[in-house]
Image (tube, rainbow over all chains, first blue to last red; front, side, top):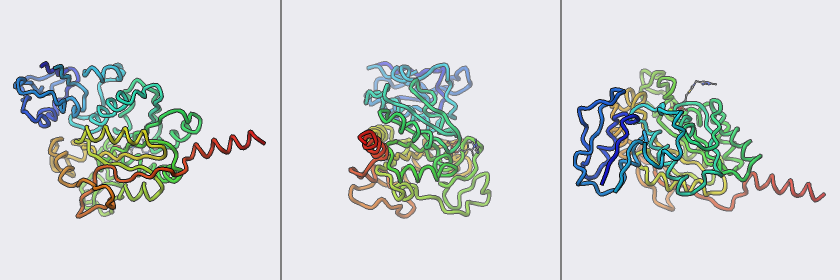
Length: 66
Length: 270
Ligand SMILES: Cc1ncc(C[n+]2csc(CCOP(=O)(O)OP(=O)(O)O)c2C)c(N)n1
Ligand SMILES: [Mg+2]
């Protein structure tokens, strides 16, 4: 399983983290070039490939490969 | 960027103008999935007015008309009359659609012209800084109702179906899966179809109306203040809660471009 977050377009809205039923995401302390705090797929082994994060993302920047 | 989105987005138009957590971006996301699954890219034309919500289709690499405030529907009607083969989807906001463009909306519904209108309701004029809209709840604080809105909002379902629309669905931007299905049904419906999406605006509505700028909390609020419509029931606002789902479908109503076509054929016979 691979979760790609495009930091060029992510605005750090946290919807992916809130929508994930398996708590895969956490907000990291890392900031993107635009200054937004980035989500991070910390518990990637829990991912069930439901793609809710991909579907809720308002900036079209999440990609699940699995 | 997501691989599917990459096939449909004009990268030179990025970044999206939407604020972090804006529901309009999720609607764009769902719309891309819808048109991809339906395989209608070449048959599609999108038309929009003015407002944040009206930017939704502008990023797509399909035929798009980004028109003037409140007039997306008349542009779309003109396009449909000249190109009845096209599947036309109008994106509008609650201000654009029911405020300045309200008269166009009811008359297009009355004609039952084969268009799909997607209205993104954020209960406010987002782009211009948070003025009250015809959908702002009574008592809500906005830039132009600092002591609370003294007017009643539209019941958009009653307005649009009452005027003659033959398909109406409502979801929130927090229901991307259901929204995709509703968009598909609306586009496939022959006649005037309307999809209202309650779309959170964390920046303008969040600050003044919802007491939170957290988009997830706003989605939760929308979910708590709506209920699932049961097929066969009357789609009423109950205890302040709006029904969600496919609220109205009427087939076999005469459609406007069909009527025009038969008039044309008759005239050519004479
Ligand atoms: C003729 C005209 N009047 C007023 C405006 C200013 N204006 C631009 S967007 C807007 C409101 C849009 O509200 P809505 O349709 O709800 O879109 P939102 O930004 O909330 O998505 C207004 C009043 C304009 N551009 N043109
Ligand atoms: Mg609005």
